[in-house]
Each structure stands twice: as C-alpha cells, then as structure tokens.
Image (spheres, rainbow, N blue to C red):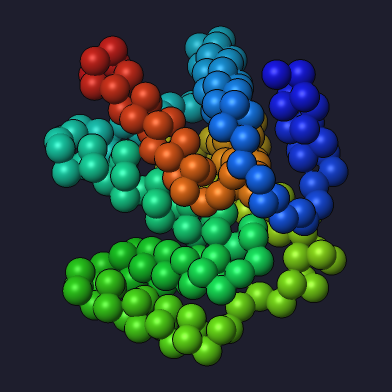
Amino acid sequence: MNRTIYTLYLFFIKPKYEVHTTFNAIQLIYTIFLFLSIRILLIALLYLFLSCTTFDIQNDSSFFDDFNYLLFLKVVIIGPVLEEFLFRSILRFGRFSFAAFLFALLYTTADFMEIKSYIRIFIPLLFVYVFYVKNIRIPEGFYLKYYPVLLYSSAVLFAYVHLWTFNITFHVLLFSPLLLFPKFVSGMLFSFIRIRFGLLYSIITHSLNNLIAALIYIYVIK
C-alpha cells in the first residue's frame, strides 16, 4: 500500500512517459481503493465548503430530473468509455490509442452539434479506419518531450468539461479551480490507472465511480 501511495505521489509531481508491460492485480485493487477513498474525501470537503459559504454556488441537477435506464447506461457505460477514449487514450503511444482519441473527439463534436445519430457514428469510424490503416499517430518523440504538459492538460480539460454540473454564475467561474479540483484529481488517477494497467481498467474504474455516484443520487439524494 505504501509503495502504491509513493508511486502515485511521484506520478502527480513528476510524471514521465513510461511503458509498463507487467500487470499487478494487487496494485490495481489498491489503486482503485485509493482512488475511491480520495474522491469521497475530496467531495465531502467540497460539499462542506459549499455548505459554509454564502456564495451563489449550486449544483445543476436538471440532468437527472428524468433519470431512467437509458440515462443510467449513458452515465455508467457510454460516458466513461467516451471520456477515457478522449482524455486518456492518447497518454500512451500507439496506433489504437490515437484512433480511439480521434473517434471520441469526432463523435463528441458531432453530438454537440446535434448531428443525426448514424452520421455521428459513421463519420468518426471512417476517419478512424483511414488513420488506423495509414498508421497515423502522434510521434513518440512528442511523448518523451512534452509528456507532463500532455498529462496535466488532459486532467485540466477533463475537469473543466464537468463545469456544467454547476449552475454557471460569476462565483462558480471564480471558484472553478476549487470546485473542479476533485475532478482534476480524478483525471490524474484515471490517467495513472490507464498508463500503469491499460485503458480497459481506467474505463472500468471510471464506470465504477459513476455507478456509485448514480446509486447515491437515486437512493439517497433524489
């Protein structure tokens, strides 16, 4: 456990591009346990802050007003897969990594533009096929030179795309670094799992995290 904590600490303060070929199931379980513990602690501290402040900061729960099985599927499976493809796949050098990132980027862009469902899937798949066959990817030298920038940027962007979970006000924007800090830490922890154990396990951890949050909302908050 102490070794896992120290490895996480080094990853946060001094990340560097490494390729891990060995799989340690015990370390993965410890890491997921630490992730959930840290996340619960940070969220508890955040809500304690929100309960003590008089600023106009409120969560936007309208997304869950008509919570159903389809939305549950989107939150627990589709969302984690797309977000891990978009923010974590490119953290490892490889043809599939870039193809997964490209698919998620094009799909989410098409979804935001409200393009028809079959088009928003077909076009990304077409681009991915071309890029994958042509073996187009980010040069490995970029990872070696700019890896900390890539990693931190990924975590920050991941945090700020979740700003919509708050009712956007001046105070929300002002305190956004604090409000989104738990998401930033989550992004870093997802990244650690993705790099150490693989993209599949970061997706599973992300899904587990969202599942717990959804169950708390359904059975405790709602």
